[in-house]
Amino acid sequence: MIPGPGTTIITVPGLRGHVPEHWQTLLGASRPNVRPVVPLGRENPSLDERVKALQLAVETAGGPVVIVAHSAGVIATVHWAARHAWTDGRARQVRGALLATPPDLAAPLPDPYPSLATLAEHGWLPIPRLPLPFPSIVAASSDDSLGDPARVRALADAWGSRHHELGAVGHLNPASGYGAWPGAEPLINELDHAKALP
Image 1: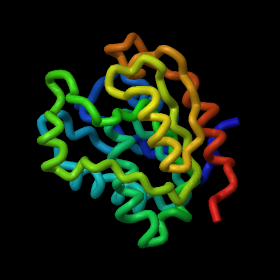
Image 2 (image 1 turned 45 degrees about the horizontal axis):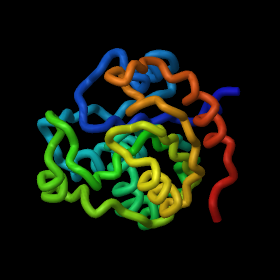
Image 3 (image 1 turned 180 degrees about the horizontal axis):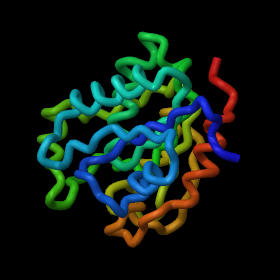
């Protein structure tokens, strides 16, 4: 099964530019109902711009959406939910969110990522720990250098997300040896058909 014909998949990238071989890019190239939030890259650490871009993507979808976020895109998504999803009724529009390999932002990120001080200055920290107002799945790696498994599970618990163990996939990106991620499809489908939260 695939997401319903009226469902838009919105991909939310992390702190990177456009990467042709990234699984989010490949997902977008493989189906017409994917709408990417344009990557801003590591040189632009603005959380506000990312939240505004996600809000615009949801507003212009014109129907139900499944959010598919990776890395820092997960953190941008939970900030967006804290700012918008509860307050303006957008939660009803979101069928679910697939949150893949979030960083825990508890330890410095390697170069060339922004420093934790820069991220904090731009509003990334603290990470919201409110339950998300829509179904969600945190797809977690057991050996992600950017996200300690125990801390990522604690975030998933705080967000009310189902924790889905991926095994040793690093950061689930080309640098970890991953391009296409076929495992995203069944998780997206699960979310598209999930029962809405009360």
